[in-house]
Length: 489
Ligand code: UTP
Image (cartoon, rainbow, N blue to C red; front, side):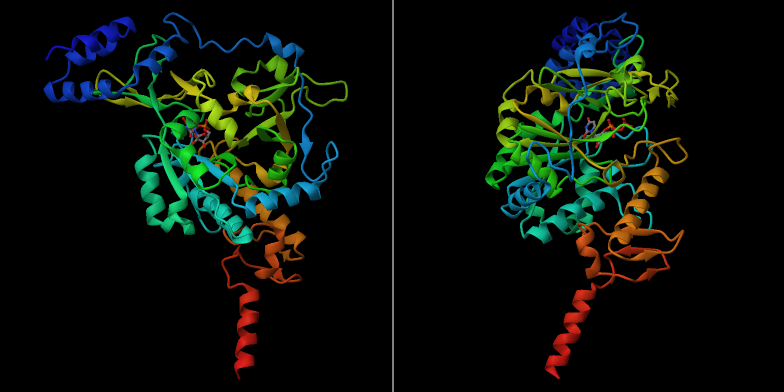
């Protein structure tokens, strides 16, 4: 079959001769499949991406960062302390009120391919619970469930998937009865994809002989995909006024903390973001910087080491606010931005992508070999009229799962260690003693915070065996049942 002229013209304009060659080596069925895929590609996005990376460029162009010399770390509002006359108790009251009015919605970003983790299936299905083996999805949905129980209102949840994760994620939620959430309050939407380029010759890569390798368009793809698929209207119809977005790979996260929401509301911010103090200059988190009251996140891969390492005279890092990718948006800001086509530009990211060799075998490279094109949701920060930055405790809120078992950092064993340490600290605050070396996990669906622990384990108890706290029969129920039985007799 001849390559249809419109497609041939496109490929010529985009300087992609390798796909034309691949086409000629395919049989009829293969050509049909490749043609069908090429007909479904959003070519305007491809042109936009390719313009970022012209053939012959040695490396992806990082954004020009000379302006960083005039920038500084923003003054973050520390959780639990007062800031600009806002008291933590006022923030708590305001956040609780918003939750009990049903004014808060959640967006779970779960479209990433999770290549570094090298696990089978969506990252959200990874069994991370150190005792329970609960998956990331179960833990994160559990947190929403616990909030709904405490405040008497569901938190509508939109889950962003991609072609790589969509079917499996929907099925997983179905198979697990939506982890107890009301399925009418869960909205799935799939993000867009763009082709992946070989890093050296900037040609499309093939995933199979008749399929171009595609990758989701970054977590920033959330904005247009949510709007186009009706998600923003869905939230509005549910009475949601503020949206919190968070990533699928951090089970420690506290995205619906009433105090965090309260600070966001009381500061009348269009966007509020959570940060932790960076542990070391080279930590792989984006940093928040501020210049002339404009805020921006610079990805760790874009931040030159010389700037990342800079310290102030007091010894602190010059850019010390590490983003943990929990953002709260005023929904009217999101709606306004969804009409702004240039709100979120594409970035070029260097990643390792399996390569189809001419002998038909697949090579999984050790090092990045490909260019992906991604939008970053945090690029909305500079566009927000008012921004707040809230610093949270890393031990309570940050343990990302990025790498496979046995890695130096951000692997399952590191995440589980952090989960166990947080659970142990919570038990101690509730007056429960945990023997050394005994793994204790918190069931997030039943325990929202330390206040819930006495419903399950009485203060003064000593724990001597591995336990998922919250899965046992609540003491309060046992007590009240006994009470009713006694009354009945
Ligand atoms: P990462 O940037 O860590 O990417 O995503 P990843 O896909 O999970 O992992 P690698 O880089 O391939 O190893 C951070 C968060 O953003 C979401 C991910 O699902 C994760 O929650 N994300 C990322 C999307 O939803 N869509 C994307 O296109 C990219």
